[in-house]
Length: 91
Image 1 (cartoon, helix red, strand yellow):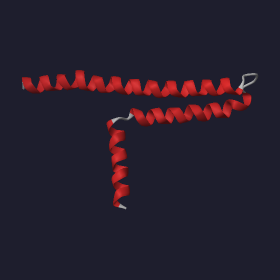
Image 2 (cartoon, rainbow, N blue to C red):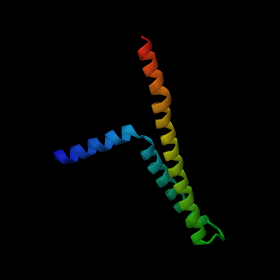
Image 3 (cartoon, rainbow, N blue to C red):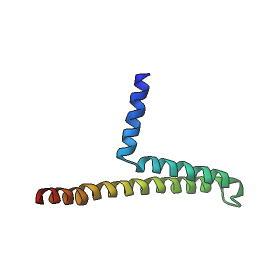
Image 4 (tube, rainbow, N blue to C red):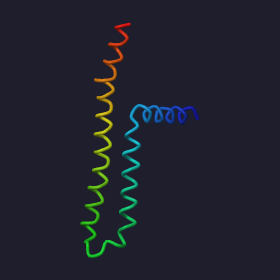
């Protein structure tokens, strides 16, 4: 049971370190679920084209979430942290 708790705490620690990964996964599954529900009313669109659009939308969301996460971490590392170090050095 301790290995399970250790893995669970490791997962939660990783989620706290990078909160955009679960956001990206949730968005991916939400887009795929929505597009699968809309599959019945796709009209004259071929199945392959509909699936390609679904894949592109889901991948676009994940890439966007990763980009926002990288930009946020760069902001913390290169803007906030030096600012905090400078104010600590001034005191």
